[in-house]
Length: 114
Image (cartoon, rainbow, N blue to C red; front, side, top):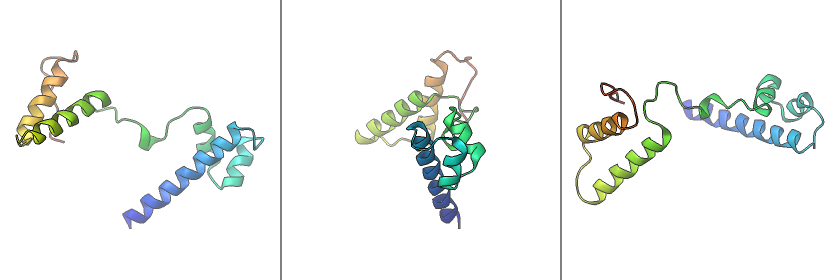
């Protein structure tokens, strides 16, 4: 059931992107006409055309590490795994806390369990 909902959501998102592109390329004269043509919600399409990012594409506000820091952490995990050192949760958490404390956060800031 969740897979079907996810697939439907992706389908709708694709239609919104196509409608937005058609409007921006002036193939369709108005946002309302594009929404009707592609069978998507007008207000959602209006927001996307005017720069509002989809909720699923936004970073949650409670993330402590930036996307670049998370990517660096992933690369570090892969590199130590390739060298034969198992990336235990404790080791990964300590590295994440090290990154967090060195990017200007308060020294008491730590990452959570997830």
